[in-house]
Image 1 (cartoon, rainbow, N blue to C red):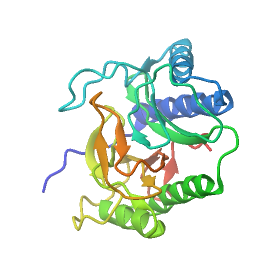
Image 2: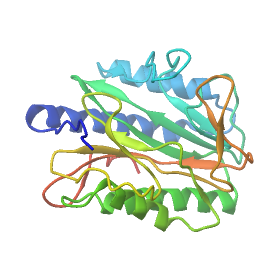
Image 3: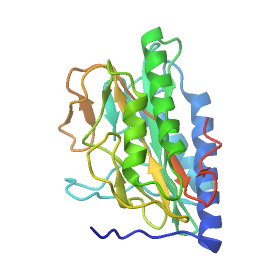
Length: 258
């Protein structure tokens, strides 16, 4: 199978690094904003304001993925508790004990960044703390496999293997290439789908984004046409980094995001 993979180098790569640095810094500021009483719309408005102030463009706002019923109406995807990804910001008020995933993207000098973080709201349960830890560890297990000579499936297997069996690894959503567009080839599943995928070469940039649920891996699409929700309504976490394949160690372009 042939893949349309666009390698990054030179000035484009420099701008992509800066794009991810800017986005990661915005999301780090969002972590300080998240607290009981804040609405998901306020989070979105903050990300929009910081993106525009930096002279950049939100990459999700008015983006229409294939099959979507209408363009995405916000700057950030803000997903609470059992919402896995792509939650549309609203006047929903965050409560103590919630967890909230914020997924952002911006365009800096033509280069698209993409990263996400799940944040506790106030004091969360030990169960939710463990969910966040497991999901974050899954992301870094995948990043460790982002080495020249490996294949995409090596990343996928490492992510799935790192997650204890009691959790559900979401299978119908995946990571992807990123840089010149918000979504590029190849797809990067978060589980072993048995497909080797392309060999990793220097200059590839992949957005790895495991999504892990407290219960079943099954999800459904809400009536808004964007928000994915766990079928059993147990909580879900999501972490994402954009990663450059190099001749040495993988480079996390969004490394400022902790």
